[in-house]
Length: 141
Image 1 (cartoon, helix red, strand yellow):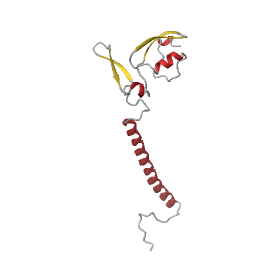
Image 2 (spheres, one colour):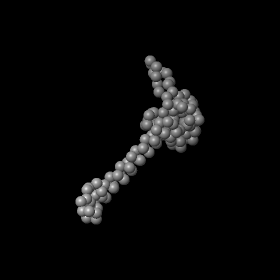
Image 3 (tube, one colour):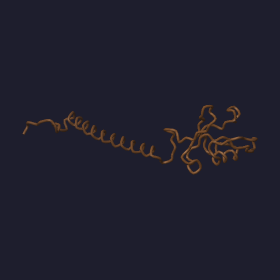
Image 4 (cartoon, one colour):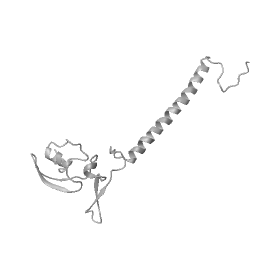
């Protein structure tokens, strides 16, 4: 199925994606950034290059991907996760995201409660349930 893709398995495929167990296991056991092989499977012989892998900190450490660098593009540069990659490791970026969402939620519900109270008072006055709003001066006494 990869012949139309030049033999590429895909980008960020999940474990269990490959029909060949040898290739699937190798994708999650081999080092990042090294060409490994040949690996024999029922589909033939294969060379593997792992360019990016997420959620494998025991295997990859802080590096999750490689990019080509240098003057002629032959150097391998190990990089950390992409910004906004959704990497599920708990790092400070994710902690900051959680704090930001929590602050937004608190602000939203305070605003909804405040505006809900105002709308309820206006609706009650419009229905003549109450004679005056609290901030209006009453001269009936």
